[in-house]
Amino acid sequence: MGKEVIRVVAAVIDHDGRYLITQRNSNAVLPGLWEFPGGRVEPDEAEDAALAREVKIRIGVDVFVGTKLGEHLHEYTNYQVQLTMYSCKLPEGAHPYPAAVADLRWVTSREFLDYDFPPADEKTMSKLLGLVRN
Image (cartoon, rainbow, N blue to C red; front, side, top):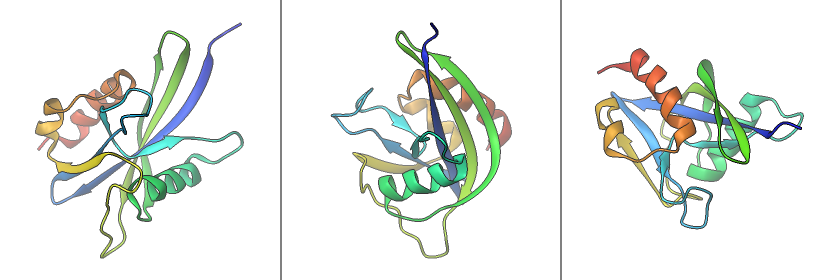
């Protein structure tokens, strides 16, 4: 029997050459690590709907889900994570805040290396860096 595959979506939100990243809460799986906002896709849920829902929960604002940027399957000890990243935009005048995350920051792609990300995110971020060099 194979490992459980957990589908996860993440929003790559850019504004003036900076990208929004969030920090996981201390009681979360992989606490304190940084990631693009998003979360788990529920069974029978469309990825764009899951992403909009999860972003609203985590940073308190709506998001316009755009094109798929990439995906990656990462194997952990007891499960696998299928991570899909989407280009997203915030509505005019939206002000994200850490509604259900420890913190959030706007960083340049060069600053990604200054933050610790979960292993599943690192491979997809490498692909992303190829797309967004600044």
